[in-house]
Length: 424
Image 1 (tube, rainbow, N blue to C red):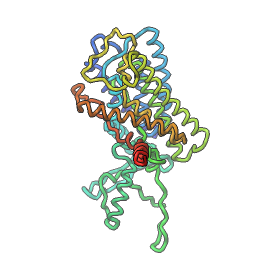
Image 2: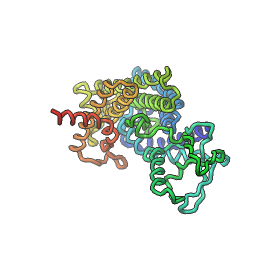
Image 3: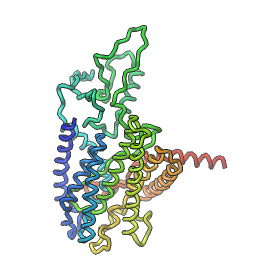
Image 4: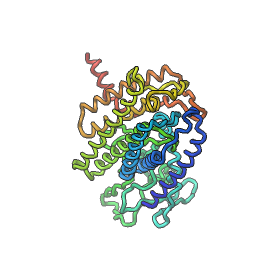
């Protein structure tokens, strides 16, 4: 499995390097004075480590992602010190902003899916032939080894999770219990293989429950496995590798590191490996510290680049028609690059779920109240601003963001306020 993961990561890096090389040459958003703001070798290596760790997070290899992100964070810290000493320029193109990287990461899941499936060869010794019952084609599906956990390179797309596939399969079987082969194509990959060593039961004997497969023990993309709280699970990727991103890369790496620790904590508690132990508490404290560090660092950058106003005013995305900042700016990087209300909402949402996981109900409620107020501001902002505005020829306005998951977490506060208002 390690060889397949290495092949997947190598294939992903090769495609990402080729795409980034093309985008770096054709990046016309940079002003002429900042076209040569290229990254140093250490900065480029940190970007590549971040994108590799993002793939590891998507396929469930959180420990490997944490080690890569820790190395990238150390490289980026040393690079930031050199930038402060030498006052080196930073790329100011749109693709090097937080909003652009988040939008790119949220709208390119198919590329990672295709690369991961194309890079991993099918092992003929561990396959099972499945007949779909529709077009009579026999296909080979790679099955996980029974001795290992189901953390293979085949990661589930966020749009259609394994838990939903399992629920859909159960719904179909309950509606048509006596019709054999009545299945959909989407349920083929989620079919549990029938092993020969399972004991058979007679008609008069009570059927025993089959052993639970590891396929459905993986975390859902929308809840944490405890009470259905929404967690943002998408790692942030760097679009243009080779551009000097400055503090934006530090925010991305720190957030991805916090997310990897967050998902590792949930996975450990869900599987019962370290529940209640000291290692689980260390993971929770580390996750909280990383989320808080990322949040405070973003506010510090916003307040430093927007001395004339407040950070809450600067956190809303600027108009797409606004001109890029002048090169004679006093700060090494404009606050526009780290201005992202989406990023702020993501951190607040995940922080609230960590507080709920450890039982800090007061802090959990406080984070949700802040998140609810921010969602209301964003909703008002979207209603006053024309949607689907085009920033460039191929990029839509990132302000057309989805808020369903955040609204799901704040539903309890909304209902509580409505109940109190009716009682008054």
